[in-house]
Length: 423
Image (cartoon, rainbow, N blue to C red; front, side, top):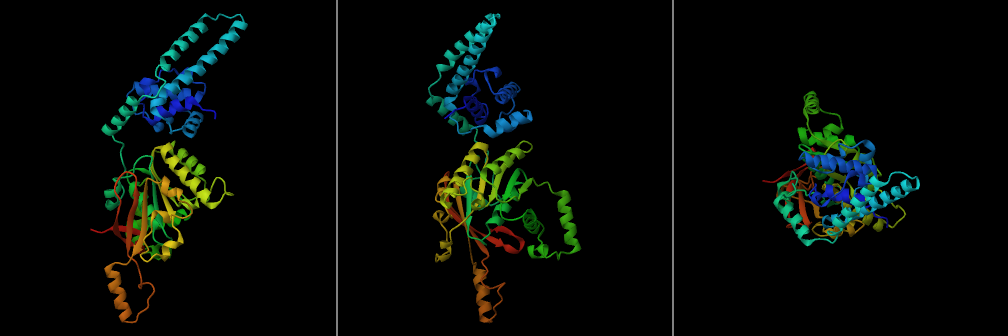
């Protein structure tokens, strides 16, 4: 395997937001790749001016080609304690290049004194960084302590009951919301995205529904206009004005992509393109099993397993939470209580392993539903729009890598395409 140590150095700096810079004794011309050289120059300038050092701040100052190279090739699966080793390998390569240039100048009978001085300095530098080559546990613990003292900001969801279990959406986390068709996973996913996007840039990938249908649901929940009225175009002039006012006044930062049949690689490319202009903080994918596999000829289990792994790696690479909606197996319909488990995720057990948090969504009748249906039966009334309606949606946190599990109920308000927490 050909390891790019220049990539690892830049990736480690960005992944630690510059915390390892005291261990990086390099100059921009030590980098062979011009895009990494330019990125390193920007990093040192940000350090000199006491500004935040992260992938967004750095890429914002790069030329388009360097930005594309750095953003698309950075490997965030790095080990900060190994940074001195990465640096030593970059210096070794730099020395090799200097020696090659020295040989060419000697062949041309040129003045090699300046070149010899540069090579000597690089060799001295190499001896210095090699002293730090082995991983240092104290450095690892120092990095851990720094994160305890300066915890990464979590992003709260719009559901207090969910926040009680997961605290909020963590950077690099993969959050899976599973449900059978018709339960309301798109409603939940869209509501999460819309509410978070009141304050942050959020990308919503809809691989099933078109953008217009999603926005119909947003308007229904936001303005208390029934979804049926919107889709039938039977809204009043007053409601039309309310929608127009929403268009003019909305500061929401939701970005919707409704292109179907995308691979994880295409999703990644779109996110990076948007990140070059916006600071995307959360990504929502609706839904996981509709992502096109990189190898469509592989068995379905292998396809979904690889998609799950790729989504988790993408969350780690970009340093942002990804919410993936997911379908469940049909066997859930045969359970007496309709209560799904993590093992009910369709097509692959790999999803259960990769996800940091898994929330199962299911619907049931409330006491009011039962009382209403009993009354309807007593009157021998068989109106299908009223009978058997399940107005409660259960959020069951069945896996939480960082905390407690448990469940809570909320009101599923289908006519307005929204979920309301019970008080």
